[in-house]
Length: 73
Image (tube, rainbow, N blue to C red; front, side, top):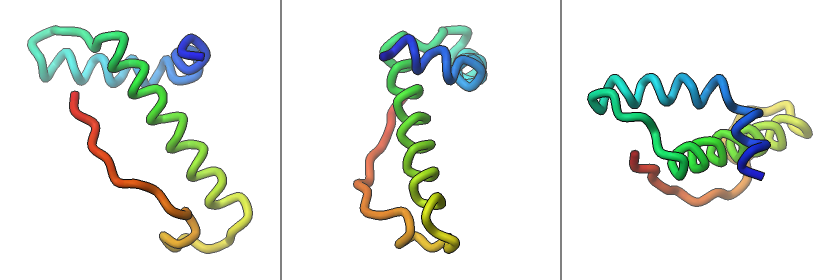
């Protein structure tokens, strides 16, 4: 599953890795963080697709319920 996500989001992960390297003195993103970022991108894509698939509105209520969380890098 992780390989599929890596392939699907390889361009965005590359951008995230470059930004991380600039902010952390050349240290690359770990594989665990790449998995987390890829999963976050996939979940966000699914939620937004579902929210706008059956709806013409753009209200927060159209997105359904979700839990707040924080992602620390």
